[in-house]
Length: 307
Image 1 (cartoon, one colour):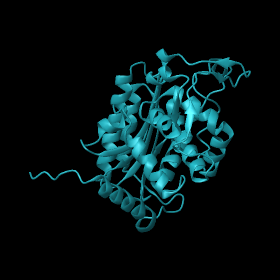
Image 2 (cartoon, one colour; image 1 turned 30 degrees about the horizontal axis):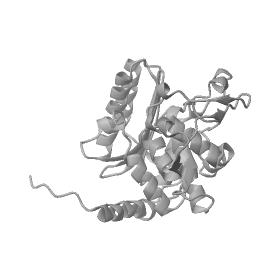
Image 3 (cartoon, helix red, strand yellow; image 1 turned 60 degrees about the horizontal axis):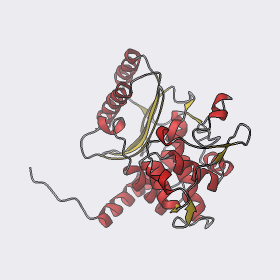
Image 4 (tube, helix red, strand yellow; image 1 turned 30 degrees about the vertical axis):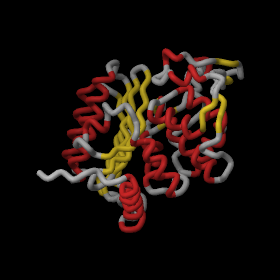
């Protein structure tokens, strides 16, 4: 088989723009209720796989042309874990487009935040974070762009809280509402234990995440250029055991995972021959290898259905 070299970055940008245009013009999203459901047998196979896993699962799947879709408990509410970092990123680019922020502006790195529960200060524990280098930069500055990169690709909790404080929770929530993705409910920063004990948690539905990713994929979360940059950041995600593991090697995936105790999510834009958005939320499995395998199996079946 003759192997072709990877196209230069500028060419890849052009291809990505072409995908956006195709999704928006050649394949406009049909009116609600007009998407074609996947084959009943495939749906039954996926649901049997879920039943055997013993997990509580929600799925939202739709091709970017809007003509193939599948959902399973997509309106059920789950702890959002780190998937709530997607709307934080969207709000950052939204404010940058409005010239309220500049992506290359510096921001002080600090580890002190106000609890939603009572306004008291709390700090993050590096042992509970997937990225720890930023803690050693306390007192220094990082650009908003650098913090966003860490928040998405390495799922930095510290970068997330710094950005949320800068952008404002109310602004993040307002943008989510504008995008009709109210299933994503962002209340606070991460690791706010006092708020957690009071049941004040960030939650999401599979449907809410689907709508946010579709807005990015169609260039509607902010504008086309902002969407292109957000997709590139999501493509640099370092945790790829879920949805990407169920796809053919080399498939481009722009996604964000979320993981806490007995919670494991993945939400992705998949640039397959027929591009699609897929969100899988998993609750109740103690081992992440089991939840990752479940997500990969579901992804594999849905990918094959698009071919």
